[in-house]
Amino acid sequence: MSSASEDKFFPGLEGVISNETAIADMQGTQGQGGLAFRGYAIEDLAGSVSYEETAFLLLHGDLPTAAQLDEFNGRLRASRAIPGALIDLLKTVPRSIHPMDTLRTAVSVLAHFDPEVTAPVQDHDANVRKAERLVAQMATAVAAAARIARGQEPIAPKAELGHAANFLYMLNGTDPTGAQAEAFDLSLTLYAEHELNASTFAARVTASTLSDIHSAIVSAVGTLKGSLHGGANEKSWEVLEQVGDPDRAEQWIQDALARKERIMGFGHRVYKTGDPRAVILKEHCRRVAAEIGDDRWERIAEPIEREMTRQKGLPPNVDWPSARLYHYLGIEVPIYTPIFAMARVAGWSAHVIEQLDHNRLMRPRARYVGAPHRPVKPIAERG
Ligand SMILES: CC(=O)SCCNC(=O)CCNC(=O)[C@H](O)C(C)(C)COP(=O)(O)OP(=O)(O)OC[C@H]1O[C@@H](n2cnc3c(N)ncnc32)[C@H](O)[C@@H]1OP(=O)(O)O
Ligand SMILES: O=C([O-])CC(=O)C(=O)O
Image (cartoon, rainbow, N blue to C red; front, side):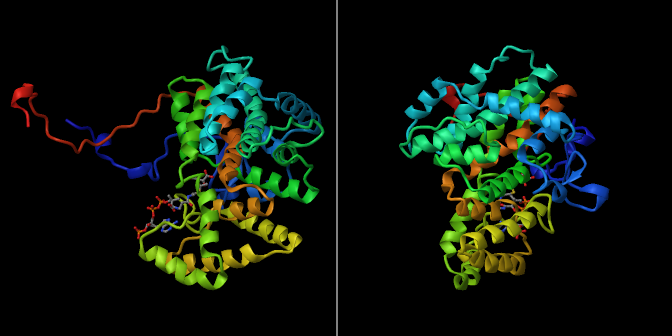
């Protein structure tokens, strides 16, 4: 006999509240709608605090003082190098492997070399230290894997550079301009955390079995990869390229929607009137495009947005402008989603630690719709 709770069915868990969290609020501040990290509105954080300050906020509960930030930066910089064994392994994986698959492997390998790998899974302080190391090391792993995929040698981190600038340096071998580093840093803050999205949920489910933080982050990387989630930033770029001309946008969208295709970078499970991160990032895309003196992709993006609103009422999500920003920064498309992951690791880790600190096993139910119960026939009588 089924209980009342078993009869409630929420496909895709839409609208279901499975956790309490003190990390992100998608109602924003004062219940006005929007996004806030630990009480700070995303509009106030973006462009005002560095990614390092955002990561500290997520992992430690509040924005750092100058002294705390200094120490945090010191710890991150001291943890940036990745084991030689990981670099050797990255050199052996086939070049055709997607960088999200390489990153998933890299996080797993990093677990083996973590100095506190044997710490109890619910040791809060050890988990925060492991999370800090992951924030530092995942950026190095993404840059190293990208260079290896291009047939280049990885570049060692540069201690005097901040997180965003150091990543671009490790990727390209040259120091970014201040404007490039700032724009990239802002995108990392916008990507750093987003409540109970699919990859964070996956991480929390893994942690809820009392598995370790690295295993939870491996689950999250695998979940972020899909094109309905983080993989959409790579696919958004493909949309822009396929449209290719502002005059083609209306017809292209009409045709794609007639074929019942999903236009990547549009729509959201929670935001129905717009993603506040996309609004912020769009402004920065315009600014960076103006700085480099080429607004072609802004001119193509605009009519696509207009058509998606007109024909489907769907606004863009964060993955839509981030694809353009990364293009302006000269970053190769296959690492757009790994960059999302190396930013989101701060939010994922904060959630995993919150889960482990107040754990309850996550185990929902399914409504059975298969064959009725029936007897097992001897093999000679089947068919
Ligand atoms: C960082 C992030 O993860 S943000 C999300 C990134 N993902 C994408 O950009 C992929 C494209 N977007 C989508 O597929 C969806 O909007 C999702 C998966 C993000 C959210 O979707 P849901 O909340 O599940 O909405 P759902 O799938 O029920 O769609 C509702 C309707 O809008 C349509 N729709 C939703 N998104 C899109 C889209 N991008 N393009 C075309 N149609 C869409 C659906 O086909 C459906 O139409 P119908 O009612 O006529 O059948
Ligand atoms: O919240 C979601 O469902 C997806 C999203 O925007 C994110 O993870 O940044």
